[in-house]
Amino acid sequence: MLADELDYVVGVETHRDEHVLAVVVAPTGTIVAQRSVRANARGYAQALRFAQEHADGARVWAVRLLLLARRSAVDVRREALVQLRSVIVTCPDSLREQLRGLPAGRLIQRCSRLRRSPSCTPDELATRLVLRSLARRVEAATAEAAELEREILGHVRALAPQLLAEPGVGPIVAAQLIVAWSHQGRVRSEAAFARLAGVAPIPASSGKTIRHRLSRGGDRQLNRALHTVILHRRQHDSPTKDYIARRVAEGKTTRDAVRLLKRYLARHLYRVLDNQAALMT
Image (tube, helix red, strand yellow):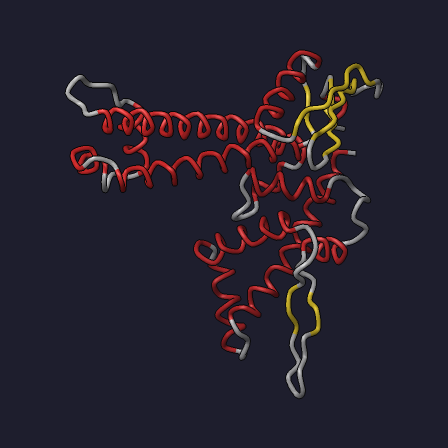
């Protein structure tokens, strides 16, 4: 079992405004430390330091917290990049001409290295400072997200490595699937897992037309993870392309074909998780 390979498990009880962490000795189940942290970027950093201090050994998290922290870093990066591009639109002409049209990577590098210059006007000095600050914020958030993704990948490989062999399933999607599934027995069947994901078919017939639609309820992050896999497979997976073409030829809409694919995918990935758990017991 996984517990035999670990020294500690870091459990997390999540809430809207704060999360409660507990460090548990894996072989015995003894709680050795507890702490509450705020549900924000600073709190996530505190949580990581807390685990490093009290779980100095082979450890595994509750993956949900790592996903939350990465999502926060990605949001910060996206917002800062939007703000940076907005500043460029209104910055002095000489500076705007240097930066306009650069791809995101080069733009961030260029802006992060902007310096004060005695020849600059006060307006340009202020603009350079803002652009440098935003660019460095993007760099920091990018590095933080990458570090968290590496951590997530390690946990996914330990908990459910077979997920990563599935087309379109990367570490973030796999982690979201693990968080939703949690453990063997939590979701009683693949049909219940489909309902949890919001991909169970719901009758939507009208008159002589018999059809179904997807549910708008359930775990929307899990639904998003399945949607991400389908998007990848529609572009890169030949069996998926053939399936959609066949369904469309039968008279289905592309949307209906995707609905059917999501239902199949939920069933398949649930079985992958359950089989993986059975192998580890």
